[in-house]
Image (cartoon, rainbow, N blue to C red; front, side, top):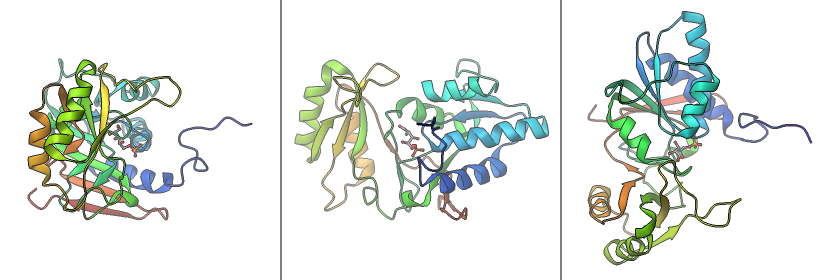
Length: 249
Ligand SMILES: O=C[C@H](O)[C@H](O)[C@H](O)COP(=O)(O)O
């Protein structure tokens, strides 16, 4: 069997849409001398691909700050300058994927187990820009992404956190298990992930739900990225891109 790559179109039918969105966002937002946050997941791979092309073609001088182990590897493998928040606590822009984006550009993130470092990096950036295929463009969170809200928890607290989420917010909080390991997945920060399968009727009031989740001891961060994104780029399989900006931005 031939070797397959993560960016092989036969492996990912949404790749064309992801790539179109990523390329357009990079072309419209990446400039010389920027400090750039590099998100995690499959879509960001296309963004890095385009950044590399532009850095070479235009001799751009940028520094990339990773949001995960994967992002750091991408930066290093592509010989882009790597930086840290210690050196650059303020970023010009953060580019990242999302699992779902609602009409107000609120996001669900963390489907791939990365969310805390992503949220920190996004919070340090002047502009937080989302790239995704158009399946993720949703009126209401939860219509497309039906695997719950990812929540990063300190391992020793996962059972009480599960219980408290269910008591205080309803639904079910499920410990995310690893595919090729006996046991739970472990985040880049050494924690577990609970996927909160919220009751969708009525849809939760997200700001209040996020506030309650953050008040539970043992919760490190949630995959609800509310009022953070400035714009979202959605690509179709035909390579068309729709751009949505947050009404207030
Ligand atoms: O945990 C993963 C991150 O939040 C990703 O940015 C998110 O899951 C979107 O990933 P993808 O670009 O692979 O759809």
